Length: 217
Image (cartoon, rainbow, N blue to C red):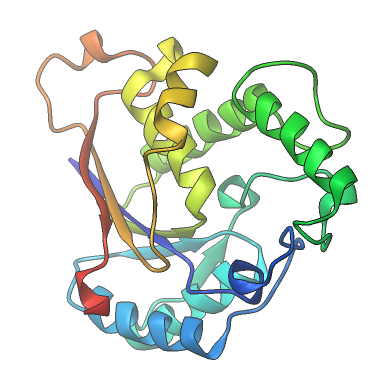
């Protein structure tokens, strides 16, 4: 059996500003403290390797965890956040044109309507999530920690649960309900169920824990 502990990055400057988050905001002081707290918790987990998104807020979180656990962090674009249209980066939420573009992008993320400029859409992220899960399956370690992002985590979990049966309407029903706290821990297990042939190309995955942030008090 393989256990994957997913950690959302600590609070970033983009999480608290009234703007559409830019590509690579840094952690706030609160975010760094959150990372130190979750790092202490991770030091008691049986992790054998740490993999992180290549974006700064995740990299910094992962490096803080790695310093505490003694692991060297590996980086992969498979675990970066959904890519928004560049025209949204840094625009205030109050900007009417940005609001319209964001609405179009949201529909494309749910599998509805055309692609929004150069932003990733449902099919793009679904393909990447599938590659990410396949990558984790082929890793030799039995216990992995992955530092990633809140919205992308929804795709990973949905893909693990539904495999090739995941559709836009199914994902849309989950997207507004699966909320993730900064440094929340989500756990997926692979290979613990009987008759793996029944569970599709990425299975059998078990959705074990979502957004455990008890370490934050």
